[in-house]
Amino acid sequence: MRLRLRDDVYLAPSADGLRVLTHRGLARIDGTSIARWVDRLVPYLDGRYTIEQLTAGLPPDREQAVKRVVEILRTCDALEGEPDAGFAARAVVVAGAEPALGHLVRAVSASGLRDITVVDLSSAAVIDLPAADLVFYAGDGQGALRLQRVCEERAIPLALLVATSEATWLLPPGAPGWDDVAYRMGDGAEQGGIVPPGAAATLVQAARRELTGAMPPGERGRVVRIALDTWRHTRHSCLPRPRPGSARSREMFLQRVRTLLAGEPLDHGSFLRRVAPCVNGHLGVVRLVDADEPQVVVNTCRAVLPDGEAEVGSGFGHEAARRDAVRRALAAYAARTVDPGRLTGSGVWAHEIDRPDRARLIPADAVFDGERAGLAAGDSWEHALGEGLAGRCLQLITAGFGSRTEPFPRIDVTAVDLHEEGHRCRDVLIRSGELPEVYDLTGSLEVPAFAFCAGEVTIGHFAGLDPAEALGEGLRSALVRLQSPQDGHAEPLPARLRGPSRRASPRPADLEQVASRLRARGRVALAVPLDHDEAVSSIMPYLTRVVVTDA
Image (cartoon, rainbow, N blue to C red):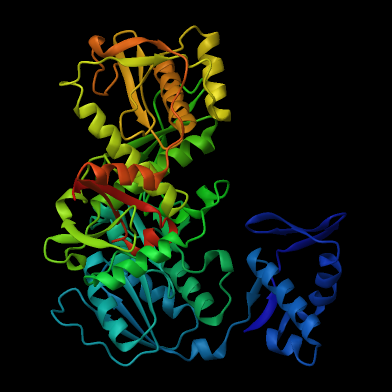
């Protein structure tokens, strides 16, 4: 592709680099030498030269420098490719059904493409596609799926314009297929709708840019949504839909466990950037909305799953609240996503937490459901195991409320050690005079567990291998309740089980020791990786369900 600087681009050197003004807005490029490099290149960015010609004969370091500068300008959408005679000579098929087909035929004809064959699929039971170098389609989703299968079998690039009841979608070559988009859309993929003016021309232009290498890096692999009510264009990434898999052997499963145990911890600060492909209002695994509750001290956020269920997260600041909500929602989504082909009969492989080189089959029904018990999303596999095991131990404790006679001791929450967020929550609650009563539920398994109560109401039960983390989560929940008073949804802690004060708080617990204590009682703690949606699992690998069963 021959490179040309767009006519509407303005370049302005600055003290710290370069400013580039394009039709997309102002871009800032930092670097003390970038302005000089661009100034030297501009006379050659007139459509006469390809990147190979520009770098021919240059030393390796200068060749790489020129390529980096060109890539930066592409990212800013400051460059375009001169019309490629090779593209114009392609044999093109334009397929679909009226009225969308007519719009697309006119757009393709106006683009300079000469070898055009039109195929009306409105009444075709079988798609008889002639030889082609590129296929365009306009119509509904069912026709798009049929044509996509044919083009995949014949390795023909395909550009799709699909009209739904809410939007028109443009899928240029190199973007996810309609099967992926429709799966992630769910109910939003209903058929029908009109084709907005210019949509067909936008698709043809996107196909040309993709196939000639002129597509800016930030737009590659993206689909375009045109809202029918506003005609607003937005670009979206789309994760591949889960593909049918096959059952793992025991050794394959144990290798997966070894990979998880050796995996790098996720970076807390960049978590939201990492999971961005999963979070999208139209094509994401979860959709974020600000919660209705007041956002006075602690922020709250609601993460809505494809089935309409929602997980609520909280934290100091919108980012912290969204991070908490997304973690909870991804774990809940993974627990609802099961591929029957990956099961061994009706079972799924699980590894023993204290002996990760041992695996056994457990009923899939005990793993894939909507329950929260034992469900965890961690920064590492070990962290996820700790969260899940603590949740299971808490379930065992609360299940024993009815038969227990000895009261739980109350701890002085003003005297316990907390992490930074816990300190902030405690300080606010003390100043407001709303510090909850906290009871130590820690039992013989020695997993730190607590009940938070406000008068007769039980705010919630919280457990974790790190007592400071569990206490901090409880204090944050108390703050959320203070902002938006409501009855607690936790298992009530009966008045007879609320004992006198005690100053000390439990010590941190060790994951393997807790699992060993369960084993000594004839129980075994097992963990299952929740990875049946491989695209989600590649982004958030540390999702698990912990199950406690008879040894």
